[in-house]
Image 1 (spheres, rainbow, N blue to C red):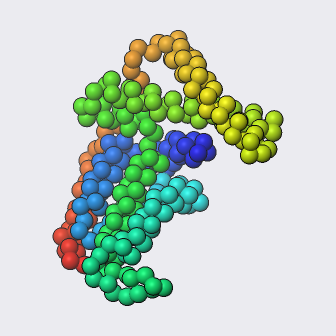
Image 2 (cartoon, rainbow, N blue to C red):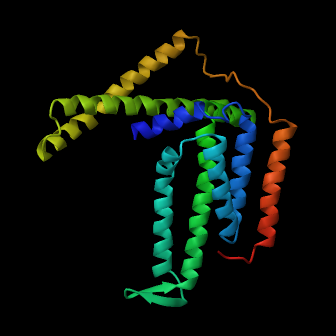
Image 3 (spheres, one colour):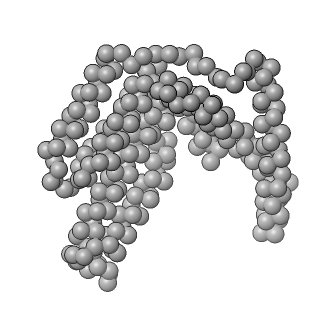
Length: 256
C-alpha cells in the first residue's frame, strides 16, 4: 500500500505530460468519462479504455508493469461483476456450462458494466498519474469550489502519507524484533500497532503543521503553475470527444 501510494504521487510529478495544462487534463478526463458512462453499449467505453491506456503508456510514459498492477483491482472487480451477471442475472438462458446457466441478457449487461468500469477508470488513472493532487485542487478552486474545502482536502491527502509512513516504520520495527514470528505474537503486535498508530500520527501531524506555520502558512497553499488550456488544448478536446460522441450516436445499437 505504501509503495502504491507513493508511486502514484511520484509518477504524477514525473511523466511526459507533467507540463501540460491541468485544466486540459481535467476537462479531457471528466468529459471523456461522462461519455463512457452514458454509453448504452460497451463499444465506446472499450474504445475509451484502449485509447486512454495507450495515452498513459506511450504519451505520458508511465511504465506498463506499474500500470497493470494499478489497474488490476478495478479490472478484477469488473470481471467478477461480469461473471456474476452472466450466471445469475437474466431471463434468457443461452447455454449451460458445468451445470450453470449462462444468460445472454446477463452477459450483455455484464459486458456493459465491465466496459464502463474500465473506461471510467482509465480516465481517472490518466488524471491521477499525470497531474499532482495540489494542482487538481488548485484548478477546482479556480472553478469556484470553496477554498476552505480544497485546503482541507489537500491537508487530508498529505496526512495520508504521514499515516502510511508511521505505520510502515512501526511495522518494520516490530518485524525486526520478531513481533510477527507466530500467530499469537502477530495478533499482539498488530494490536499494539493499531493502538499507537493514532497517537503517533497525531503527533507527526502537529509537527508538520508547525513546520508549515514556520514557513508562513496562512491557510492557503498557492500553486506556482497557472497554465491556461489555450486554443490548442480546447480544439483537441472538442475533436477527441466530438469523435466519441459521433461514434456514440452511430453505434447505439451495436454490441461487442
